Image (cartoon, rainbow, N blue to C red; front, top):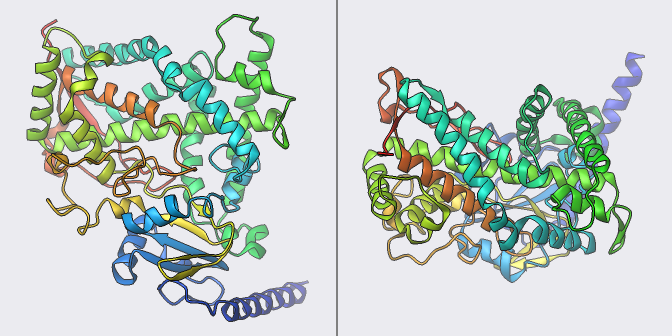
Length: 498
């Protein structure tokens, strides 16, 4: 039997080499500059544990519009605001597609989610539904009392810890807060059992798997062999997700809301199940994919941003003091922050912009795919190319951020700078831009501003064990989001006089 496997292996290698040669012959048009690739794998070996760092270094050599060959896939890497505008605005419709992706195939129900589905009628319909039923200003405002209640519970816990001089895992507490708020918006309640704890742990693995370079995505003939063991892990994650979402759907179907009763997001989606939306039939798999999308997007990005913000403020006491002074002036020391206080907090906004520049929750925007051939800056971009926008790299471009060292945390760089995070200014793109930009900008910003303002106003933060702020571990963990690799452990000190 061994000779059969050897023969098949040689046949596969010969086929792949022939395909690579044919691929090279077809690529006579002028592609963007980039590094020379290896046979079959192309430039995949250049990507390490933190691909956003690796591509940032390569862009310094080859420029902000760079071509890589990842396996057999043309991959375009964007690393400057000017080039990002070409792809996300000027040629937005051409690059509104999503490439096939093993992770979303297994985890996101064959790419049925809002984030990973193909551009077309189905995507437009579910985006409209998600916006109206969860992400509109009216919906966001309707959850104001829920946010106050959940943040109040966290403040109460931290106040007790401050009284006892107890060090707490703040990263875990922020993550749990974000999960509880997301569950109440989407499911109508929060879950506090072992099954949900398992789900949360598996969701973190799913975030990592979703961003791990998978050879099966780039050399499709090798996908079936699962050389990295990723598909096996994805299927295990998918089973946990599916069981949890099936339970939620069943709960909602048993407790079906009557006309006029307040409905949560799952109730609304169940109301359209069985209907034809555009050219698609909405069924349980679509609903589960969209639930996962809304849950992961609302939980991970906000928690990651808040966690990095507290970390940087702890490392920079003068910035922390300046923000606390602004909050003290606006709110006073006799009460906690209310969402109505947030409007005039200009320094808070600068701090958040600086965090999103230096530590974007998602270092890469979700990849796009060219739906047809296109020319950008004089270079040929072939149809089916995958486009990666490295917002982490854009945030560190010294040609863009000229007033201060772009590697340093300095919120004052935004003084007098009319740059926002809404997708209009391509030097700061934490939520993306164009058709495939994140529809949850308003919700995300509301949560981040409110929670961060509350934590900074109510508490000072001490590092345990005599650790100096300059010694804080700033290592990040790469995934669809890039949180701290090690949790932030701090001891709170309550500041208010109430």
